[in-house]
Image (cartoon, rainbow, N blue to C red; front, top):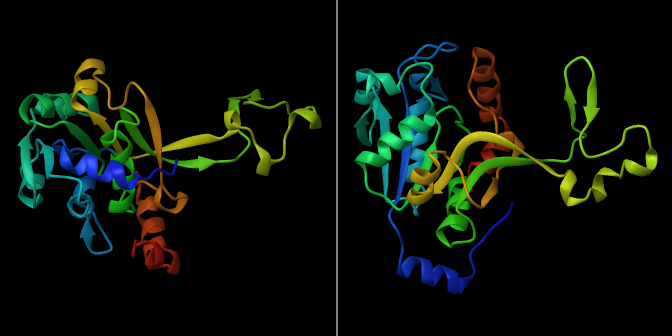
Length: 245
């Protein structure tokens, strides 16, 4: 969802700007791709890309890496918070790392960034922060808008929001009503307030809005095939154009 501050809101926000902190959880273990956070894409590690992207966002006051791994700690050119081993296991949730961070670092607004989305730009993160910063919502998450026809189920599937057997209940895609526009969460970043994180113990809560990102910047690294695809995107003309933003 596109969002921008008015001139009066910009003045008000910067006059009383809260402390905005970015945290990048980066554990050492990874089943799909070993040491994934230190894997290089375009000659730069996923961890370093995430740090640079966060640092390039002028709304963020400090950038932190939460890790239990000595090698990742050595590569993290940012503030580092040592994470307990039990909060870095395969079964540990991201929320456990965020809550541990909140217990040890002071902030008003938290930007949770994942290393596995190397195509994210600082302007994307800014668009996620601004609605929370201005009080238009309490949380945002990165997502791209989908106008596709969604079906759910396994062997037997059902349409979501429309009737497939009636042409009258299947509107043209260009005039879809709001309740048939879907937002696909990319997992690149989440923004929330300290108060809402501690209250809900969840990365997003309360009044939640999507922060729109391009479909081409939505891909994540979960396998070796993803690395090949993302490298190809970075070598293309589209990436050269969008990376200037």
